[in-house]
Amino acid sequence: MSSETDVIVLGAGMAGLGAALHLQARGREVAIVDRRGPAEETSYGNAGLIQAEAVSPYSFPRDLRRTLDVLLGRSTEAWLHWPSLLTTAPWLLHYWRQGTPERIAAVTAAAAQLIARTVAEHQALFTAAGVEGLIQSKGYLRVFRTEQRLEAAAATQEAESARWGIAYEALSPAQIAEREPHLAQDLPGGLAGALWMTHPLGALDPGDVGKAYAQLFEARGGRVLIGDAQTLAQEGAGWTVATAEGSVRAKDVVIALGPWSLDVLRPLKVTPPLGVKRGYHRHFALKGNAALGGHVVDEEKGFVLVPNKRGVRLTIGAEFARRDATPSAKPMAMVEPVARGLFPLGEALEETPWMGARPCLPDMLPVVGPIPGHKGLWGHFGHHHLGFTLGPTTGRLLAEMMTGEAPFTDPAPYRVDRF
Ligand SMILES: Cc1cc2nc3c(=O)[nH]c(=O)nc-3n(C[C@H](O)[C@H](O)[C@H](O)COP(=O)(O)OP(=O)(O)OC[C@H]3O[C@@H](n4cnc5c(N)ncnc54)[C@H](O)[C@@H]3O)c2cc1C
Image (cartoon, rainbow, N blue to C red):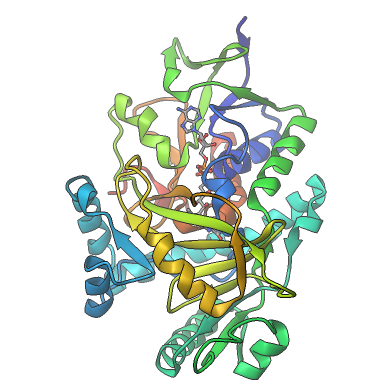
C-alpha cells in the first residue's frame, strides 16, 4: 500500500519533531519516518537543558594545556579516541580552524538570534503537549572548584551578558548550599562559587518530552511511521521512502537524521563536514536522603548532574571518535569518581553507560535550508550540543523557508554549502 503526503520528515528526534510540528502548523500534511520511534536516540540521552544562555559556540579550545590534557587522556571534559584518528583528523582540523575570534564572533551573532526564541518555542509546546510537569524553570548552576576558573568565567559571562542580555547571578559557596544542600559536602576545600544561569529550563527526562511532542503531532493529524531513511529515492518530481505501512510519496523531504544525516546525503553526493562528538550518560540512585534540586554543571570537570525520575542522570563530555566505533569505557570510568566527590550518588542503575553522538558541523551551527541541486530536499541537522534546545526554533525557521514565509532570522549562516 502506498500513500501521499505533503512533506516527509526523516528522523523523529528533536530536530525532526520541531520541523514537523511547525510545518503542520502551516497547513502541511506531514509524515515522520524513523527506524526506531520518537526521541529514542540522541534526543533521549541528553542532559535536557534548554539553554537560553548558550550564545557562544563550543569551540575548539585554543588553550594549550587543555588541549594537551585531552591528547594525553588526562582530561575529564574531552577524549580523543586514537583508533579513530584517521577518520576524525580532517574534521578536527576543520573544527580548529573555525575557532578564531572572528569566526566565534560571527557564529555567536547568528546563534543569539536562535537562542533568543528557544524558551518561548518550547513553552508553547509544553503547554500544548501537557508536559509542564516534566520541566523545571529554575535555571541551572555552573559550579567552579577554583577561584581562578571562577573569576575567568565570571568576566566572560559579564561581557556576554552585557552584549546579549543574558541573566545570571553569582553565588557564594553559602548561597550554593542554600539551593543545593547535598552538593560538595565532602569535597576537600569545597566549591569556589557558582554562576546561576537563571533563565534556562531543564527537562527531567528529555526523551519523555520528545515522545509527548510526537503524540501532539499525531493528535493534530500527523503520522509517525517506522521505516529506513536510506530507502529514499527520487520519483518523478517527488520523493518516496519505504515504511512498514508501505511506501510514502511527497514533494518535499526534510533530512533530520542527526548524526546519521550523511547516510542519506552521501549517496546524493552532498557531503557537508558533519562530524560527531560522542557523549555518555548513566543513571544513579540517590544515596541516603540526598536530593538534587536542579541541573548542575561542573565547569572544571566537564559533567552535568541532572535530576531524573530514576534518581540522577550523569551526562559527560565529548569524545572525538568515529560515530560507530565501539563505546569506550574510559570516559565514564574517569568521571564517575569525580562526580561522586561533588554529589553523593548511589548505585549505578545500568550495567553499562548509554552512548550517543552529537551531530556537529565545524562552526557549531546547524544546517537549516534547501539542499542545492536536489529539488524538494531540505536539511535540518547538525544541532551539536544544543539540539534539544534548538529543535523547535530551527524547525520554525525551516518551516518558514519551506512555506515561503519571511524567515524570522537570516538563514544564510545555516546553508549546507557554507563550507
Ligand atoms: C551526553 C549529551 C548531552 C547533551 N545535552 C544537551 C542539553 O542539555 N541540551 C541540548 O540542547 N542538547 C544537548 N545535547 C545535544 C542533543 O541531544 C542533540 O543535538 C539532539 O538530540 C540532536 O537531535 P536530532 O533530532 O538531530 O538527532 P537524534 O535525536 O539522534 O534523531 C535522529 C533520528 O534519526 C533516526 N534515524 C537514524 N538513521 C535512520 C535511518 N536510516 N532511517 C530512519 N531513521 C533513522 C534515529 O532513529 C533518530 O530517531 C546533548 C547530547 C549528548 C550526547
